[in-house]
Image 1 (cartoon, rainbow, N blue to C red):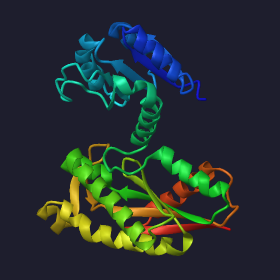
Image 2: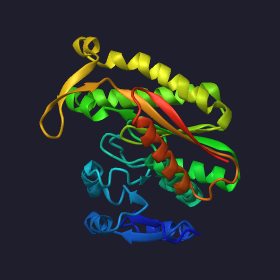
Image 3: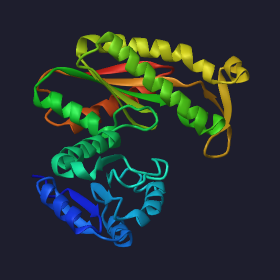
Length: 306
């Protein structure tokens, strides 16, 4: 039983709230409100893990769902609607919920629907919205899983060089295109080399990781650098391509020439019992990546832990 999971129930129908409280007692901590204003205050004070709204008895609250979902802080809050099949339904454009259940099916299916909403919300929170790659939580879980099992693995920590000047010159939209193609290259190349037992994640910004088996990691790094260096010039205007750099200003306001984007990769290879915690691996990978960034052009560097 997960008692720390708060499930907020919005309904003025005592029969519905009593049923939901009874069925969901083993899924978390159900908290009942009859009015949206009171529920909203509670959400602002401590966001629940799930909001269940009885649309039939709380129809006046539907417009407030739009206001709630427009707030970036609460946009990821999963909302499950309880619908009465005999009531008119205006469509999903007006009802901003993530899932629904017919009132007649609550007794039989509500526990399963709540569990699915929780799992779906967890997966969505762990995915980087730009590249659709798993984020930090999944990355750390992957590393710790391999450590706990005593597996040999390789962690490649990739970072783009001169990305900020590119973003400042071409704008964040073009910068996002670079990040998307970088994530796609790393994913495709890694999976082509080893389709199983390999993982690609996006830490955030221009930082990416690849976790795979040691025998293929050097080939992956080589292929990623080769593909990146061939593709990246197409993301520049012709004059910058021909010049081989972009003209910009450093933090002191002095004009500088910034080279075209390159990629630096720091690799840590662990053989079985090298580490006990994922933080140890990521710390060393960051150090090796920093060393790789000191080199000119795209490159990768290794740190082997036996």
